[in-house]
Length: 58
Image 1 (cartoon, rainbow, N blue to C red):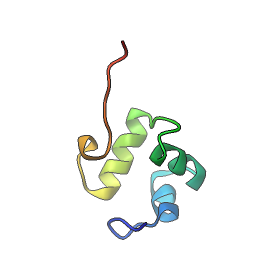
Image 2 (image 1 turned 180 degrees about the vertical axis):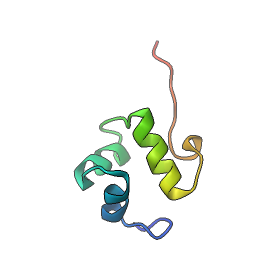
Image 3 (image 1 turned 90 degrees about the horizontal axis):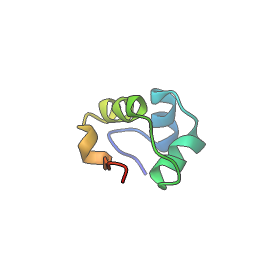
Image 4 (image 1 turned 135 degrees about the horizontal axis):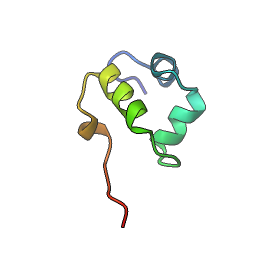
């Protein structure tokens, strides 16, 4: 998948995580920290809410 000129590998490098960690986030196995979510959104030129769902703990 390529988005905004990034491959999964180059996006992972741009935001400072491993490809495996980014893949785990994309597959909803782990959650991105707020700081990482911001870095990903900024890199893609979108708002956080466009790519992440924020849920309150119950």
